[in-house]
Image 1 (cartoon, rainbow over the protein chains, first blue to last red):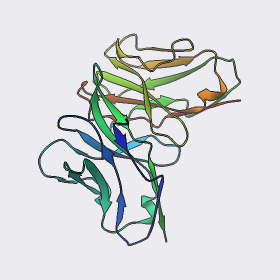
Image 2 (spheres, rainbow over the protein chains, first blue to last red; image 1 turned 90 degrees about the vertical axis):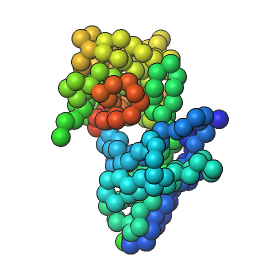
Image 3 (cartoon, one colour; image 1 turned 120 degrees about the vertical axis):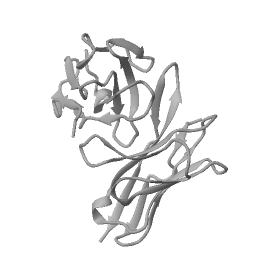
Image 4 (cartoon, one colour; image 1 turned 90 degrees about the horizontal axis):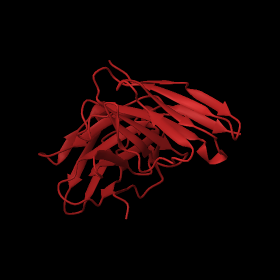
Length: 114
Length: 114
């Protein structure tokens, strides 16, 4: 089973509307969870992470994510989408495989429609 | 802001030729990662270095891929011979320690094998 899953290949949202990009995980213990964003032909940029503490994590560019242990989810949210938010979003989880590594989901393409 | 440098940004090579990618991590970052990202998928770890030592290369196709980080600073990833299926984005990332978070990614090398 995948350690982290992003069930939606694409999410479309109108500019100004709230957006949610979904992520679920399946690792044992206390997960370390991350969101990254990728613009065309660029590397991944860190948005936010959950290590411990408050279940609502705030990150860069107005994004936030909610950790839900009972639902094993870590959905990315933003109250009001901008056209410039259009990009690929990746959820990742830290795993131990002889060393600590990040395992990424397959990504969700977010399109914000003007 | 410190960056992970990668070169070249784009590379087109013919099948069966050799190709090499270079990565210079953030100064002082002991851990370096090479990821491969096939179009439409999330990044997959190829090799992880701690200083000059390989920590994990279990997903590296060793019949054709090699990676080195001789002085524990910059790193080179080589493919010989290249195959059509190697067309992908090759991403380098570094972190201060091998604790599995705090990655900084480079902009990547887009490889096209024709």
